[in-house]
Image (tube, rainbow, N blue to C red; front, side):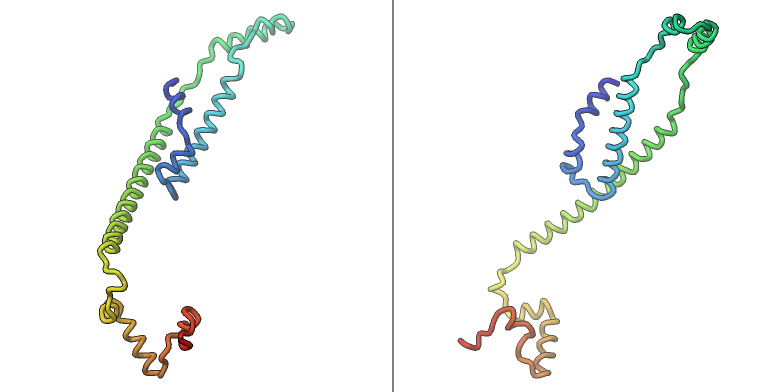
Length: 174
């Protein structure tokens, strides 16, 4: 138990979430676990600070009715701590662990898929030709809507793109 206590005291809860990049349900579950851990540690500390023995000789000197003290002493000697079946709690912890592992695996899968997509995008960016080397036909082939929109504007007699002057200024002075 002392080894478990010393290991639990060494856990830096603030670094766990940030170093592992936990978000969403996993981070919330970790925070809930931390809160339960802190509450349990606080309760153990309070209980360990309380006196653990009863001085019956002190009460024998104070009280006149010795039979009450004898009865209490008899009950105290016969008392045995209750044993609890912690199987239910262990099953709950195991179920939580299974859920946490499943959630972590799902997160890992999503992160791996995102990394693959980002690597693919990075390769596309690195392999792409510079914008200056592209021709109008190549841009139109990549984005057919440009030709349709241009044809529509020309058919209506509009030779300027809406918002162009506001964005780039009027070059007609030159």
